[in-house]
Length: 329
Image 1 (tube, rainbow, N blue to C red):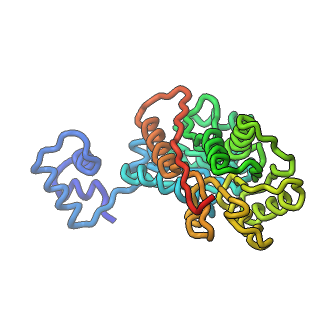
Image 2 (image 1 turned 135 degrees about the vertical axis):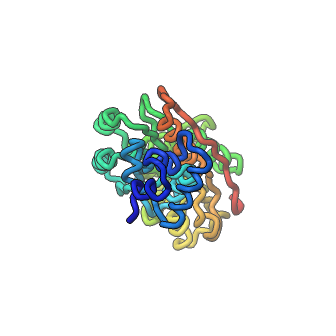
């Protein structure tokens, strides 16, 4: 493999000149530049990324920590991140926690050891150990979806989006509105979406039956189980159910269909997340689109700004959302 020294000898220039041509930095005469480029083309020389990293002290790699890889939310987030980073010559190193909190800390240490230029974390459970680990990193960092004090946060408006969906259901004539949530350790999806539901019901003077509120996990089967618990234990059967994710909503829908309950005529089903599947299932599910690709693009932009020397105090950047009305509720 040809070296910079050999290119310099063939082009009759110094190694510094070759380096300047390769990195497009510093002054080089047009004649010398053309000679160097001609030799590079003839020999097929490709600069070593490792060598570039040593010179610039940048690896051009951004670490991304995701809770799941199988969800549409994760893929949309990564698409948004890559849309920005790829244009700047950066690559993504993905790690998946499978919702295990201790793996978030493990992967923070792993990525720091790999000398990534920055980290984007889509966290699920924010605890003191995680915050302390992040504060020791001393590299560009952005969190998506969960608020962490003192950091750059790209957040979704979980509370108001949920309130708007409940208000929408009420305007459609529903009062007996059930709710399928997740563990409140997940502050965004678990706590704030539940709070949005409860506050909207209270503001409309609607009493919530205890059995209407159930807690699941992030999958379709759990939505079905929760809907079963709601249906079999409710004195007043719900006429609508809101699930905090589309997957949970699809599970609830499938349970109702298996029981012979007409959807949406007898019970309306709404979700959150605007997944592709929610469009094509019958009946299609009314949902909230959180502009997840935009969150990825914004997170990537914040990382690049930090890499380029921008110093941020705490930032809270909230991504917009919209309610998507599908089959009649």
